[in-house]
Length: 91
Image 1: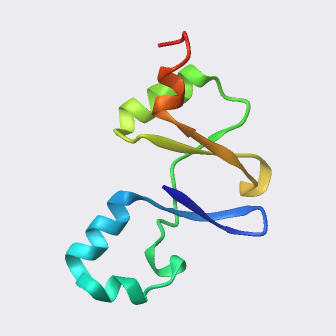
Image 2: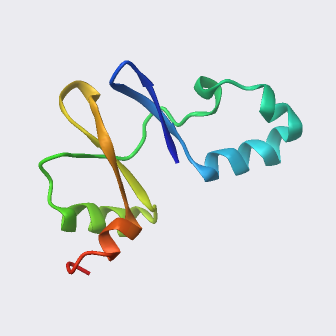
């Protein structure tokens, strides 16, 4: 998964699932698309002040492996991945 940004502001994400679906639908024409054409414009996010346990619960509930961490005005701060949480003593 990668983010699509303008400056530091999150515009969307492109996941492996997004690319798989596009490849199934469009085949090799997928390679001619821009990031803007491929991205999910409403990615799943979490605020920087949320607890790691909240992030883990949200990922499990939505059956996703990554959440984008944002601040005010969709300021991109980072990404938390399920595997990162698994390496803590929390899980």
